[in-house]
Each structure stands twice: as structure tokens, then as C-alpha cells.
Image (cartoon, rainbow over all chains, first blue to last red; front, top):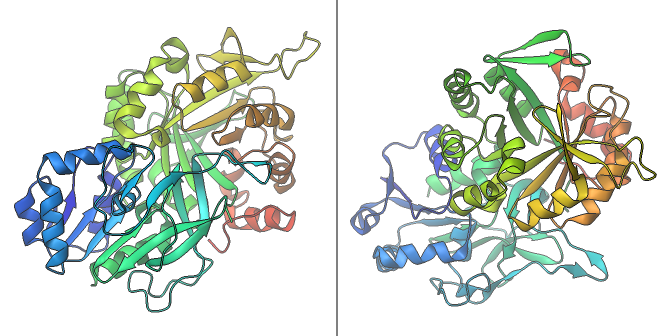
Length: 203
Length: 259
């Protein structure tokens, strides 16, 4: 079973569609902790405000996700789903993240070196410095383009599997063992994005 | 590096893609779902479907069309036309759209921007502005006026003021159509685009007047557009996005290539 977590943060249609297009059977959109513990893979999509992740806690999903991750179930966070894997975000300072990765997500600066920085960062940008051996980004060369739409970003760390440059470098993809996240939208990133999802589904 | 986006737009009337030449002779350009996929395969960075029927009877048809077009489309997909409430927007998202574009309805009731944004995120709300230069003004660009109802009704509002308000109310992007340029294939309104783009922090999509690769390069380099949209240039095999993007890139604009 592929469990896609619904925490009322935006539109899940595209993610579900892409996963089904890639041949995944038994795709379940769920809010049930039990489903997560029985899942073969877990996806946490989500666009919108970081505060919306509080519903994960309310529904008892945070504990289930910790358990599932500890049990080795592959987990992929997308966009806000990636950000939630960090300790938190300045978008909602009182809302804790999972804390799986160190650091907090920050907003893009309004200016950099006197240049105005538009925000949100919307559009196709390239994946750089892809970490050799990344399972999630296997077969994807650095310089490949993916689609972004976000105003907050995760910091770089040793778990960063790829970075993207916009007002400096940020984490485009993060990966440690079975815990992964992408800031971009693989379901909207044409063939490169489908390859990311294909890699995840093949784990 | 963030690239500039080329957006293929389809005007859909009664379930078919149409293109008016100088707003008259409506020509049938094909099936929206088929064309959406063809554009995506040909390298368009994004697809926009504008329902120009926008009648009550036409809503069911358009949702069915959106569903078919979205089925195997893995690039961003925007739907506009006839979205007047958060419920309308929800129906369009459920059918598979990633963003909605709102125009007259946002002018009539600006709260709509935040209503849609609060459920689906600001990135999902594009405020479309139909703009006409103020011919009799001493500064026709700065005084350019917003029109609604398919460009038939002047609102008395300045384009720049409305763009700033739309941003403050939570729009994710601005789609700026120059009615003066639309359909001419003589180039985008770079001055107006630049003015709006510099007045807001959110991305601005330029529309109206695309006729050649040079026009796109101009609106990116001089008009400071973040994306540019064209309809007729892509239909009837006039050009495809890949060839167009290669030419624009040669003019010094970063493009998603290969695509």
C-alpha cells in the first residue's frame, strides 16, 4: 500500500495521479495512523502554510510517522512535507516540525546584494550538486530542471541530496536512509519529476 | 538558475480550443486535452486553459475537459474563466488543475483571492488583469486601466494599484494581458509589464502580442517578466516551444532546456 497523507494542505489530486500513472497499485489517501504503519511507502505532500502541519499532530499521525520511519518504511515529504521534516519554520515559529533533520526553514530574503528577490520562488530551476549514491535522485544528472513554488526553504546540511540556487543555495532534496524530502514538485516536474517518484516507488 | 517560463495558453469554447483573429473569426484549433499534452511534450513549461464560454451550461463541459487534459499532464496546469467562488475553484482543483486564474470576479469581490488561497495556498491563485493603456493621459503606461468582462468594461482602476492590492490580498502570481497588444503579434507591452513587475514581489506573467522569439526575449530582458504566455503562436504548428525556447535562450534568457 502507498499511503498519501491528507492533512488538508492543498490539493492532493496531482500527486495521487502521478503515483497511479507510474503503476502504483493500492494508493490510499489517508488520515489514519494505522494505515501508515501498514504502508509500504508513505508520501506527505502539502502546499500552503507550515501551520497546517499541526493537524498531523492532532490526528495522531506524528507518532505514527515516527514509528513508521523507525520501522524503515520509505517516507517522502514534498514541499511543506519536506519542511516539516526539519525542526520548524519561521513561517509558524510555534509549530514544531518532526525534527528528523537539524535546522529551521527560513523565508527567502527580500533582497540579496542589493538585488530584489521575488518571492515566492516560482518556476523551473535546476538541481545542483546531486549527491552520488542518492537513491531518490538516481539516474538524474545535475542541471536537471524541476518545478518550484514556495517562499520558505530548508538549510543545507550533510543530509542534503541536491541543492538549488535562488538567493543562495537551499536544500532541493534531503535524504537519510529511508527518510526523504523534496522542496520541488515531482508531480509537476515533467519527466525528471516522474523519475524521482519512480525511484521512490522502487525502494 | 531560475528560468523564465513559456506558457502555452488555450482558449476553450464549448469544449474546443479556439483562436479569434483580431477578436472575430473564431477558428477551431483542436481538442484541449490533446493540445495540452502536445504542448507539454513540445517543451511548454506550463499550460493554461481559459474557458471563454463561461456560461452556466458550459461549466460541466469545462470540468470534464479539465479532467481529461489533466489526466496525464505532469507540468503545472492553470484553469481560468468562470471561477467566481471558492466552490468553483474547488471543483476546478478537484478536476486536476494546479492553479486557478481569476479576473472579473476578483475585481468584483477581492476577498475571493484570500478565500481560495486559504484552502489551496497562495501559489494556486493567479489574478489575471486585462489592461489597456490610458491613451489620453500624459502617462499612458502608469495610468493604464483595468478592464473586466472579457475586456468590455473599464473599471476606473489603475493597473499598478490593482496588482499591488492583489498581491497584498494573497495572489501568488499576476497574469497581465495587454489588450492593446493582444492578437496583434507585434510584441508584448514591455513598458507596462516592467512597471507592474517592479511594483510587486510576486511573479508576473506577460500576455498579449507574442509573435516571435524576439518578442519573448524583449519582455523577459526589458519587461522584467517572469513568464510569458502565448496562444495562437503555438497552434496550427506555427512553432513549438522547444524551437522557440532555443531561440530565446540564444538571445541571453535562461530557459529550461533540454525540455
